[in-house]
Length: 179
Image (cartoon, rainbow, N blue to C red; front, side, top):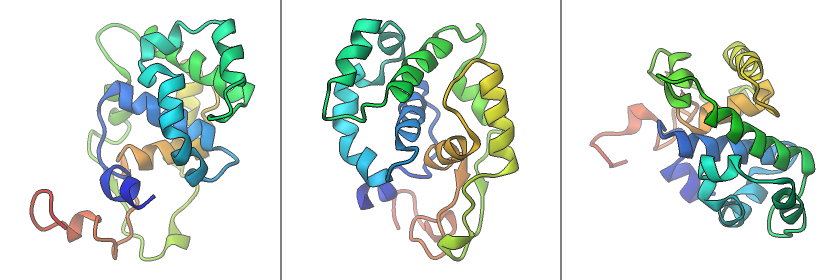
């Protein structure tokens, strides 16, 4: 958990495959602890072929049944189906744009920095997440409620919710790559 927090969470992510992985992991986390999903991340990466969007989009009903038998991952049919379906949505993305560009446009291509002083101040969702959730559903995504979307925004660094006391808050970074 500490490595994930220190190395990934809240860091601006623009790579479509990495964003897809985070979306999938946030989907699988719904109703579970993040620790559970993080512990299963290597198994998810194996099961979903490194979260290669084209490979996941090409998964068949037989692949879904195989995934449902894999005890190393979260075996929820709706969540597994959503991951495959969402990869298909990404594969059908309109030419001339991509998911990352589309998503980052919601924040003006700059992370939103909240300056929370206590973890109980961090919301589970926001109006922005509700808006993006509606837009994602309009584009055909599944299992993208506002709470999942807000978690994605946090994980991918579109929203930086590191507490001001955290070494990883932007104002506590003194030199590139240092605390």
